[in-house]
Length: 336
Image (cartoon, rainbow, N blue to C red):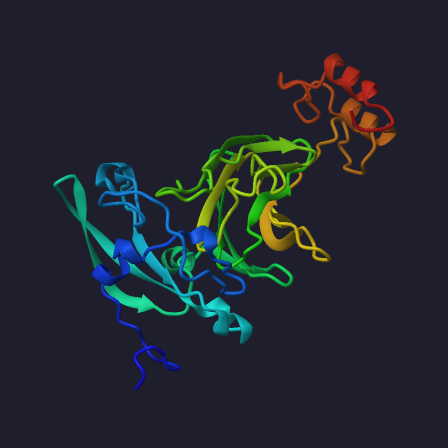
């Protein structure tokens, strides 16, 4: 057969020495993952040293004492114009589990284990290990695909942790923001964000997206628009960003919005995806003992009939008395 072509259903058994050959590693920023186009020969960034142009992972992300119970996966992805033209560009990522061994000479020894999960992006490994995770792919019109994963966990203290992961599989337009509704009265704390650090001459910057609660939503936004800086820290292809926060309300179905970084004439600047966010707080109508939505004579009669007992106690002192009567009269005709 021809050594320059890969047949349908065939594997390409690269070794780490070939994939890590620094002389053949070019900058990711030259690749349009949606169309599969990349310039060749490419212009590679300068640099030297063992880690230049190779995959880099902070040692703190591998240190066992800092990551108890962590499970690790590595992903590889093919990008090619022929696949993009044929509409087959969404199944070219695969992942495999690896173990973290001992620290030797300043580096951890890593070893692959188990089978390769073929034609699936690495974000699906999260669901592999946790059935409470939901994964939803979403396509940008006339562009590529994002994959949104999320999980909501009850902290059993009146708060819930909302955790999101978004992987840009092959969108050239890239991600610029992530937002979901937060109703009035919901208290949000512990807003978090995690991304990657570009390196080895890649022009993209690595400025974190700030998370802000405003206008009925929590939103993380890239600090610069495409017009301001085409090399801003957008969510680029084959990259995953994490978003998290705590809230004092349980989850409900919501529609999250993923803003797109690069403009595209005639196409929307965002995509929406089903997710979960905090529900609106339950409004308690003080003094509405009949639960009919209004404080009126029926409630007054109940309070007077409960006088001296704890039945209509609104102040928390254990007795229905003049203080409770004052609250009912103050709320007369509505809910405070």
